[in-house]
Image (cartoon, rainbow, N blue to C red):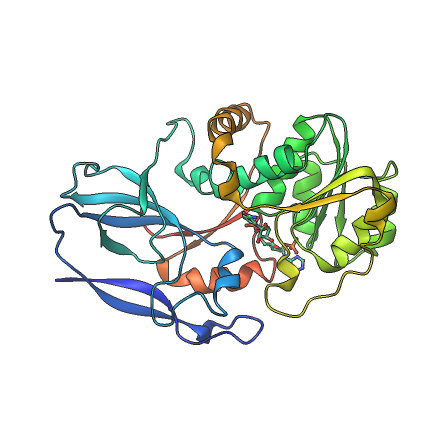
Length: 327
Ligand SMILES: NC(=O)c1ccc[n+]([C@@H]2O[C@H](COP(=O)([O-])OP(=O)(O)OC[C@H]3O[C@@H](n4cnc5c(N)ncnc54)[C@H](OP(=O)(O)O)[C@@H]3O)[C@@H](O)[C@H]2O)c1
């Protein structure tokens, strides 16, 4: 029996994550039985939601819940062929044997790199697309503010809004991400919330107010956006990463929703399955036409997944945080 590796949570985190909360554990790879496939993981997706599972839902000493792309290396299941690429939701495991229920065939456009199926053409991309267009009800030419604009979801939201002719302001935490958003993604204004006075800078950057504030952070950023919302403004609530480690700042400005008739609405990516065909068609076209640009922060090596997850909460990624496991 051959050996493989898994990323485990070994203790419940206390606030900010530590490397010692995780281990790289050795595991056996069983023989591939009838109806089963053996899959080699190629790329793993590292996502903020994973942190929210660690306090209770994630089992200790078991593979960390997470998704990625793999290649079928052995198949005794007629639905899968050897060499086939699959999206997998099987936890952070280098090689695994499965009945295939958590796998879906990946249909790839040969003109695009495989990794884009982990972000712009993957879960974060459809989150951005559905969150902005369906929940945010974006209209052409509106005034838009996007938090974590230099990240996987935010960078796509901001650029879709630009494609729709909107005035787009991005919020981010480093000057490097701010430069990318200004110079490459062509946003109208960018604010480094760590070095600038956010309420003042946002007021100056959004002189016509805000029709859509795309919420990824919560706390102080939501508080800065609320007083600037226009009548019938929308706040699609995608995430609140400032709260995931516990703590975070309270929100005091919600009363602005009343007279401005602001609508806030949460959603999850799986709500947008009905948009998938339109999303894939639009996003493939935008990527090929260079209308959506992207960055990736790729750590090489399966064992670096804990470092990558911790890095998300330190703002270490520009664009999508990924682990490269194998070619
Ligand atoms: N609803 C859904 O289905 C769904 C799906 C995917 C993602 N999301 C949510 O969308 C948001 C972005 O996810 P993503 O995958 O695109 O991650 P990401 O933006 O690529 O990476 C996380 C970024 O968040 C920022 N950040 C970290 N801690 C922060 C804090 N305390 N305060 C403010 N900013 C902080 C950092 O950027 P800076 O350097 O700019 O601070 C970091 O790079 C998250 O809230 C996530 O939970 C929701």
